[in-house]
Length: 562
Image 1: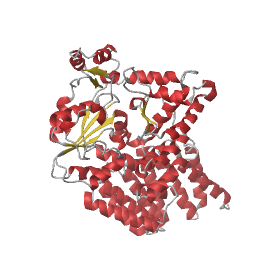
Image 2 (image 1 turned 30 degrees about the vertical axis):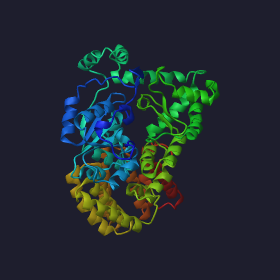
Image 3 (image 1 turned 120 degrees about the vertical axis):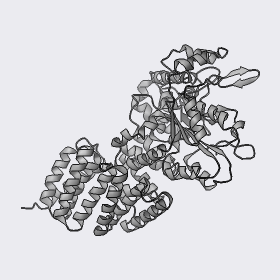
Image 4 (image 1 turned 90 degrees about the horizontal axis):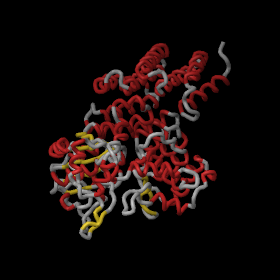
């Protein structure tokens, strides 16, 4: 755990004295009565009645807002006010959540503190199952978390159409966790009432300067020097100024954009930043020496010390200041960075990053990580490898693993839980891959009705199950009936998801593949030609496009049917 007493125990909330130690961004340090004060007095925010009510109810409470909106400070102050006698548990990494669960029990009333919740979501971290286990004990438990608005929006219902295949399961798991939360939104810009309360604390020059910045920026944003840091980074690229320092910051920022929220080892960042410097012009920028660049990136924004573009040191590694991550008009993440962070990250975290890499078009970088994730028992990764024709093991062994996962989930969550329905879908898919088509048809047909009652008949998952029924029907030898079902399933998917959806294109490829394997190559050629013209927008190297081209080449090389 990140914070403990001198004897290694969980401290009481009442004994937490330093908000900066739990993640609050420091402001300019002042010396007051012989002590160093890194934060001004707390200004009451308008959201507090809602936040306090949520904490009194207990369970899972989540504050959502932009970087430097004041999420962590508001959560800290509310916790100290309302839950002073609770123990404070702060997992430092995704893996620490699992360690916490293994040792769960006997702690008493406690707050589980998850600052920057996106660091903990996903396999090996805070899943719906893990959340239920955290909240299950007889003692009172509050899971108190914060999350940047940009990350929270990624899991909204409106974002569902933007994810498909490779990222859908990660998205769905994260969304299912967030749906359990009492969500409290906090605005970056302060209201008139909040600014009035801040003006009452006239003795603190830091608040006075923050208020003088006008209403374009929030007071907490100004205290953390976010706008000043963003401007310094942008100006750093000016030739002869600090372009190497700006490149160091860019590499660290992209690591966090990719999903790697750990400090970057110094030697890795030093090697990686060269690619970012080269993209902006390399020698033409007249970059400064490396040590000078690092000193600039680590320099505080004010003489007395506050935040900097990079946080950390050579021993712990370097982390980009989170205000920079969500700045608009950022360039695509470089391939070199994807490869580095996928190698650095622990397997469960790497799986999530691999999904991000896949969506960003870095397919080759994602492949080894998906295999590593499948070897570690992450069923979604194994399913993806099968989906794209790169199985890690035989269908029979994959089926056994999927059946075990389904059984465990049913015991914990019940038959009709979303996680169980997804696991059941994998069982039916692997059953079909084993050649047990009649059994797969029965499984999928029964599953389709239950899934439709949970998700709705036009949900992406249900559409996939319908296509699975058609696929198994054709593969069982009922070609005429199966082809009608396949075409019907694709028409419905196209209507609901759109003709350019990758799942729709992949299903069209499967129909051409099934026709080819059935010896109906003339029909397959017609379909593959149409599919090729509809795949021109897909980037080179994407598995769907690669499979379309391979099947086209195969059909071209085979004898033409009369």
